[in-house]
Image (cartoon, rainbow, N blue to C red; front, top):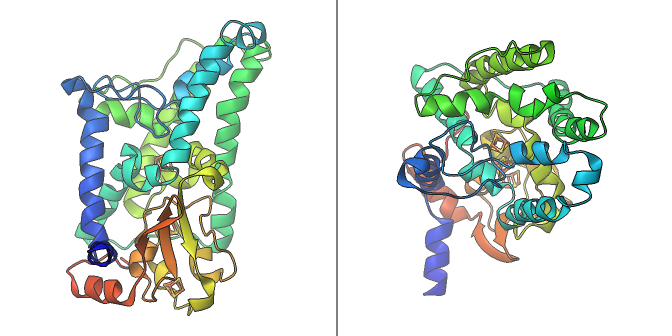
Length: 327
Ligand code: SF4
Ligand code: SF4
Ligand code: SF4
């Protein structure tokens, strides 16, 4: 019985399973507010609080507001609520870590749907060269520094209040998320100060780049996402892990060919056991595409939950649109 369930999971059509999980989670996150669903404001994904219909909110906005409090308040009376908020936020990193990106984040899902649309139009996707990839993939850490350092600089009086939640003012999700529920009010420039004007104008440019970029490049925004950087920093602590048994890897490259995030190590690294990299979104397409028994596996609490198998690979090859190939 146990091995039957295991075989069924290893042989599943991951593409279809993932599509339905993403769709259901997207509807809950983006429209759940209409059904009085409240998942709190400490989610490690872009479920944007600017969308009034959202069922929960990305923690980056309260985090920036809390860190910008005057240092004596931050270290004094507010410390307990800040610590509780942070611990709740970090608990999500331990619970699902980058699987939030592959399966939960509405902004990630939206990018996958742009990709699906592009495929239908027959336009070929674009990729980064390795040099571009190495450079661009560091931008997420610059955004992470903006999320964490700017509010702290406000707290010690080195930046003015117009820098409040500076990253959110630039984030494409602030504009795109409300639009999903018919609210276009964020599509404006704030002229209240020069800083606000520049930041909100950048936000509009980034939102435009998000739409165009996601259409031609798979998971375009995820390469730059500060939440991705945060997920990676805590990935070793997570109960979910992507593992590799390099001794059985033939370096055929199938896993790399299906990887939307161009994680080259997934095929090339045959020595690391833990194969999660900072750009990985834990979509598990690589596991589904690997034709070798047990080379790649997704573990929950160190138990093998989904593994690459020859049989699963052959079954998926026989299915229509098995795991989204190289288009
Ligand atoms: S990396 Fe992509 S999927 Fe993950 S939180 Fe950022 S936008 Fe969402
Ligand atoms: S698909 Fe499997 S065998 Fe092929 S390179 Fe990737 S991990 Fe190695
Ligand atoms: S390495 Fe695997 S799990 Fe990570 S993004 Fe690429 S295909 Fe998805």
